[in-house]
Image (cartoon, rainbow, N blue to C red; front, side, top):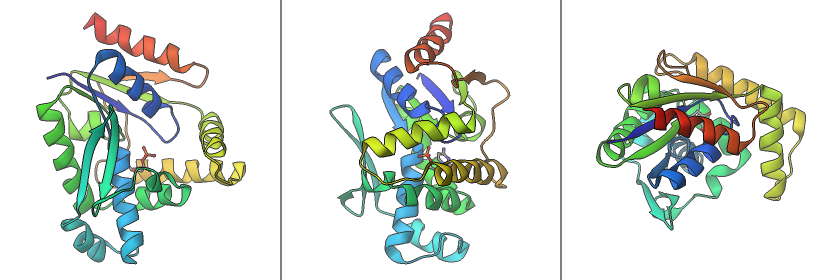
Length: 219
Ligand code: DC
């Protein structure tokens, strides 16, 4: 089984890179952030405070979350509804970051991720794939970029999607999310010891993809 772990902070470009790599290598792409985003959305829908560990555990324990693929793209389905677009809303980003810090939430999502990765060649993007979810993954990369560059990328993406966003607020949110994700107790965002660091600040998507694929081809 080929498992490629792509970890890194928000806006580092890892999802675009992961998607491209999955197409080039003809393997599955699993966006694990989408799963935590769906958990955040579930809490929002149920009126549960994402900081409330007890109620979060209750609501996520039996979450009806399904990941499937349509024309090669991941579809995230919550309570029977396709929420692939809803989970991208900026307000869901911070909810996902907060809810993902709960051990109960992570254990549940990690179980689903390991199941998918054990039966399919895939590239997974996330925060803890190389360090916790799949410590034996054959290929591990830590993709990062300067926080301002990452905020600029997210800003462009959201504007193109017709969202109204304030750049400085977005930048602050990215910094806050980096802090949350890397300071939680359980399976935080961290570069795995054996992961290759790729700083994408001044690289194009093609350059990043070529670099990663060349490492993979070298074995
Ligand atoms: O990659 P993203 O921005 O869609 O992720 C949303 C949040 O989900 C992120 O702030 C932290 C959390 N997350 C995580 O804790 N572990 C993962 N493997 C993926 C995402």
